[in-house]
Length: 368
Image (cartoon, rainbow, N blue to C red):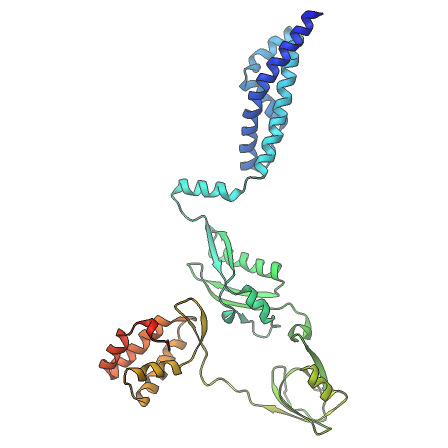
């Protein structure tokens, strides 16, 4: 009896020693296997590997032919440690971020960037899709200059599709037009709200109001600007039409609560369509040296030309030519390009003034 007890204790001791070694060996194997396959290592495979690593594979047959209590206890103890090592390694591997390993592998390959960053344009350069519901300005501000990190080895089309999917799923946008150049820079972004009828176009604090009219112009359409004469002699001056029902002679406008009280229960005696007022010149988005983007005022060029002695007539002539060049460039235009265009035109008429303007430091030209 004492012999069996001693043999059992000796087998347990050997099992604890061998099991500790097997635990760390199989745990490492489990971590590597889970990380690269994203699957848990089988406990059976772990036991076979652990026992084989400790040299039990050759001795198992001898133990089975002449089984001893100590040998059986040792194998059971080692197997318990191995299963514990498999589970522990699997848990550790699940907490290791994949990006860290990708960066390591990427460094071995030669330090190439594994990820690329797609930066959204400034909110002023996020356009509305033509004929689609507009999104709120607050959402454009939220998306302004936001960055998306994506794998660098994807084709440009796949990167654009992934960004579109993120915008649609994460921000609830209805549709997206996105164009990237070969350097993965956004050159065009237009978005629209989901098709929700009129409610998507109503700003906060306003309501859509139908007005019954005696007379409305033919071919009046949504987006037209009108002047409405009410039967109670009130006049609604210059307001945008949101909907037209020619058959029932009803137009829909968006009004704030103050205007709603004025037109409540009132019919229109006459609706007059107003001409569309196009801007006198296209708006030019300029990128300042600080990185800020703002609408550029052409009068700033005139002021700078006057500082170097250019007459008003020549300054206005140069501004028109520079404006035509800038409008052909992709926005935003840098202040450096604006100055270069002005100097180039000025050299043709007044080389001396052009030399003065060129020698002025960019930060001194506050008008630029």
